[in-house]
Each structure stands twice: as structure tokens, then as C-alpha cells.
Image (cartoon, rainbow, N blue to C red; front, side, top):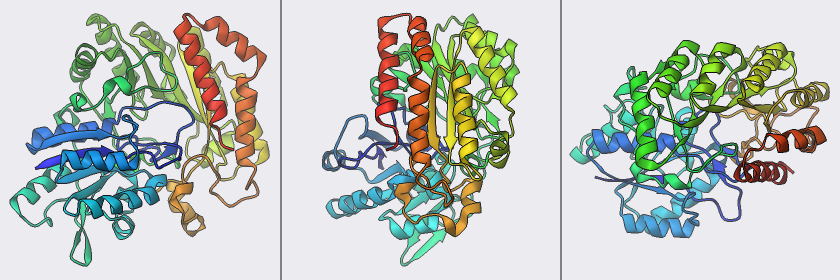
Length: 473
């Protein structure tokens, strides 16, 4: 069977949405900077389909190729797939519906399967409103391969766990599939099918920039995150030898020497990270890398080893400068822990990056001011300010119920969703936060003094300007 993995094009004259099946914590956010992350979740799925189902697999990243919807449909016709798999981003539901209706009109026989957090949580609604045939709920690799096998054999689909599908005028939801117990058994992402040279990250040093996963799932109970709905609450890790082998392939075969460890929390188990760092050093991989972390999962020894192994940046989800708000959203770290983590990173020569959310449940103007004040106090290399968005699959979404808007395009982390006294003010606070953070004389001087090369200076300038120009308005 001819299979196509598709990253949707950008809707005409609209701002791009960054999403991927594996980036489950935030299923759809409008970009504030000019970057394009590796669609690593779909690359994993492509590798599994090719190896486990024996399908002929193509990959079309319309974002990377800068295709318009018309150009995307033309290229799909040329490839002639029997079935298309794509990730549905929450704010792209309406556009996806229009795009696939047009595609179905022009290629009536093509079958379409959606993966990702949104459709996993809302399979009934998604099949009712979208012109698609199948929904792969949860981890997609095994379910997708079994779907392909059943279609090729002409068998019924009732035995494919994790699948939702149309059967005549009915929508059928098969039983859930259990999580993969051994993620080391997964084939490596099909990087040979994607344009690696076109991927980057807003705060990364080099291009191409590639993503790698060392684990799936997250054990933390953050109410705003949707990872648990997609990858579960159990933390499943890969073996270090397999991770190192994949890094070597990324570097030697695809020229990727700047790497992002994109686990939800890379440092959940500090001893494991230290062991990986030792291996990176002993194998002389000579890579540079960044990771995602929490302030309560690091220590000084860990940071020392990370720096030795090539880590130059850690991105922390700080979220708020008000401890009451942090407790409300299920992330009860302390401001003392935040400040200590950033200080340690700064002293070790690792760039700490801070991600904040405004407009949280229970937010007040006073708590927002605490958050902005904390941002100004931290030795953060960069800061990103977003609006708390109750994505489907998050506990906040479940708690909000009927109080949320029906228009999915609003779920983009750039406009306020919750009905409260801050309506219309959160967006203004976001603008104020960016202005106050990036236009401080001290920040500008420190940034200039830390620049080592012309290319690094241009990177910092471009990132800051993009953040300022593309912030919510």
C-alpha cells in the first residue's frame, strides 16, 4: 500500500501553527518566531509503517516546502497515495476540514487518517465534522500498521485496538490500545524521508537542528498539559546505547550536530542523564544540544556533566511567578527553586530559557505582575510568554466544560479563552512582558557581551525581533 505522511500547508495568509504528534503537551500553537521543528512524531510513524507493515512510504512536509494548499494537492496527486496520515492541530480543525474536503473532491478514493492529541481526546466529534476516514487514538505506530494490514487483506477493522472509524452511517470506537511497554522496539524515525536541512529552533545555535526522544510519557500532574492523554502518565525510557547510536546517525548521515532532546522533561532521572552525558563524552560525539526541563529535577552535579557533554541551553517551563497560581495549575514548584535553577545554569555556562503562561485560572493583575517581575529578575537568555490555553486532553479543559468557546481556531496560546475579569487585558500584558524583558538596557548589554560569533549575534537579534514583531496584538 502506498502511504503518505503529510504535514498540512499553511492556510492562505494565516500564521503557521507548530504541531506534531509527539509534541503532545501543546497540540497546536501559533508561532512567534520563524522556525520549523522536525515533525519527529510523524517521522517515527513513517519508520514504523515502512518497517512493520512493508508499505511504500512517502513524506510531504508542506510547511518545509512552503507549499500553498493548491500546491500541496498537486503534489499529493503526483505521489498517488492510497492513504494519508496527518497530525491534526487543535487550532487547525477548520482549515483541515476545508483542505480535506477539497482533496476528497479531487481524489475521491484516497483514505485519510488523523493522529495526535486532539483526535485522541475527541474522536467522535472529529469524525463527525471532518471528511476523514480513520482516527488513530494514542501512540500511533502499532495501530496504524495494523490498520494498513487489515485494509490490504480486506479484513474488518473491529480488531484494530486504538482505532475509530466510519462504518456506513455509524462511527465505531474500538477498545483502547495499551501503551508500548518497550519503546526501544520502535524503528528509528525515517529521517531519510524528511528535509532535515530545513529544520531549526528559535533559540538553537545551528541549522539543521534535529530532535531526538529518549523517553515517552510524563509522570507530573500539570493541569495544562495534554501529554498524559496521549502518551500516558507512565514514564518509559530508552536505553542509552540506542540513544547514542541514533545521535551518531543524525550527525554522520544527516549532518545534524545541534540536537534537541525533546522529552517533556529530559531530566526526570538525573543519574540517567549523567550516564548519557558520560557516554556522549567517551564516544567523542562532539555535539551541541538543548533540552526541556523542570526546575525541580536538576542539581549542580547534573548541570556540570551536561555542560561537559555539549549542553548549551535548557528550556524551563517556569509558567508563573505566583506560587498560588503554580499550585492551581498542578505545578507546585517554588520561586526559590526557579531562581536557584537559573543561577546554577548561568554559573555553569548553560543558557537558561524561561517559558511563562499568563491568563491562568485564578489569575489576577497582581499575579501577572509577579510573573513579569520574576522574568526580569532571572538570568534568562530568552523568555517566551504565552496565554494558558485549555487544550483538549488537559485537566483544565475537562474542568472548564461548557464555558469554553466552540471555535477551535481560538485555541492557539495567543488569545485569552477563559471568561474572567481579565478579558481583553491578558493580550496587553503579553505585549508589555515582551517589551519590558527584551528592551532592558541591562539585558541588551549582557546579550551583546555574551555573543561569541557574528552568526550567534544575528541569531539572537533575529529571535528577539521575531518575538517582538509576532507577539499577540
